[in-house]
Length: 147
Picture 1: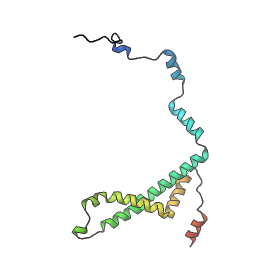
Picture 2: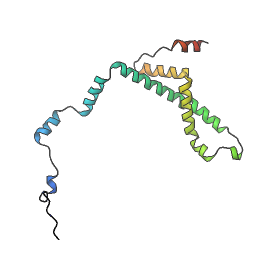
Picture 3: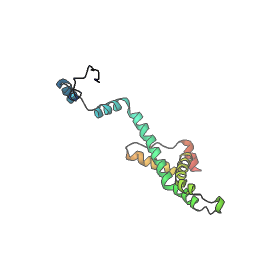
Picture 4: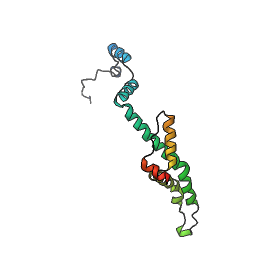
């Protein structure tokens, strides 16, 4: 049984590997790189104020993460380790394995909601190292600290 002829039956595999013409290759060599185009577009679309706001938000987030992981999470882990409940109410295997995950999540929430002064200090240090002046605390925050 003979298979029907297709319109491309006489085209070999070498014909499928198309090569760009010399004019296309020369235009591609002269064109700026994609990374340069992205940098140009990003700098044109993100004014200095937006960049500074993004850096401030990043600094606050990193400061909260640092304080949560280095100060609050170890305290929560210590509290979890002091549980000496009897067998049916004691610590299960799942709690032993997932305890650090819960500690990290709870520590992050505690730090975010409590607005610790140490977070403000770490944030100010991060902003200073990146060349941005830290913001002054709000008047309400000053009253809370003073009393």
